[in-house]
Structure formats: structure tokens, C-alpha cells
Image (cartoon, rainbow, N blue to C red; front, top):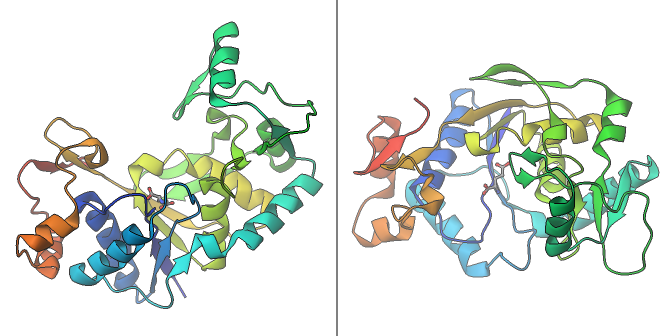
Length: 279
Ligand code: GLU
């Protein structure tokens, strides 16, 4: 059975960019009679809000993008993430990190800085260090790569990709202030949900390298990826940062029909001031 998923984080209201992402994943699944899963990425208890979860479910219903099966909540799957973390720890691929954001910023000032897609790359300060206070867990990326060798993945639009996880360095897999990181949780959930096709925005393209490494280390299946273009405002900014990112609820309050909005997006008709950055 083939399957896709839409995996919003409930730390804000969905906007039209989310509707487009949900539409891409939904229609892709429907095109081959597959399963469309709704996954709520509520792992970050400090930023996730129950009212946003309720609004996501309401918005999806209003848009007429109906998911199959139960909604998956990451907050209910923490024991699975912990088990995978233990496995990686037993493989000797993790180390504890005590650095605060400001310590990392300080360390970066005293060394030449390597910048990745997420900004400065962690310089490895805590590798081989022991202390007794709250810490996160980082993946020793060089050791992980040595273990698995070169990794590739396939994007339906961009073709065969050679993973470059060192772009992100020693990523955090378990956070100090919240359980598993996005990378660990999303990778495990995609495998557990039988997600054969990961359909998501191009803003997450580079992260796939990290996800492929985790799949190889944990013996998980390799999905096919499609990173679709993002809707942008007239300045070319992602909607999340833009004043045009008004919540879908505002469209609803103006009396707009959600299913009709989705039909317009399907036809490539975008609301005023919004463009499709995939071109
Ligand atoms: N939760 C992520 C977001 O809202 C999406 C994660 C994914 O699709 O892999 O941007």
C-alpha cells in the first residue's frame, strides 16, 4: 500500500501555504489509490497548543482534504523515539551536549565558522566531554557516515540526490527542553506509518540528507520524496514570514468555501499577491 502524509506543527494557524502542501500530499495519495495520513507534529510541548491542533483538524475538514485512519500525534510516540535513541547510543554514535545557545555563539566566534542551511554548524565542543547537568544528545555525523558509507535518495522532481548530511554537522536528536528532535521523530514516524512517498515543501529538501542517514542507521525503509514548490508573497518571501500568511480561518470567516479554494489551487489559480515559487 502506498501512502503520503501531511505533518503540520501546531505552533500556529495553518495558512494557504499549508493548504497547498496538504493538497499536494492528498492528491498524490489519491492519484494511486493510496493512504493519506494526517500527522500532528506536537513533540515540542513548549510551542504546541491544543487550540492549534483543533484548528488544524477543522481547517482540513473545511478544505475537504480528508485523511485516512487515525490522526497520529507525535506526543504519543515518545517511547518509540526513546527506543531508537537508545539503539543509536548503543552503536556509539551519540554524545551528550551541554552547550547553551549563547555558548555555541561564543565558541563560533573563537573558531572559523562553517555555515549550513540552518546557520552556523555546531563546532563539536562537547564531543568527548562529561558533565553532570541537563544535556541534549547529538549524532556524531562523521562516525555515522563512516558506518553507512555514501547515501543517496530520489526526489521525484529533482532526481537522484547524493546525501550531504555534513551540511548540518552533529545534529541534535534529543533535546534538552523537549523530547526527540524533528529529524528523529519524523523519520521514525514515516517508517511506522508506512509512508512510501514523503511529499513536503522544498524548504525541507536539505534535511532529507539527515533523514536518510537515520534510516540507514536504524534499518528503516527508504521512501521516495517529492519536495514541492512553496507559495510565496510578491516579495518572494515564504508565506510563514509574510503578512499574506493570514490563517485559513480568516478565509472561512469571509465566507469562502474551502473545497472551492482547493479547486482553485488545483487549477493553479492563486489568491491575489501570492505566487508559486516552484517555477
Ligand atoms: N512539521 C513540519 C512543518 O510543519 C513538516 C515536517 C515534514 O513534512 O517532514 O514544517
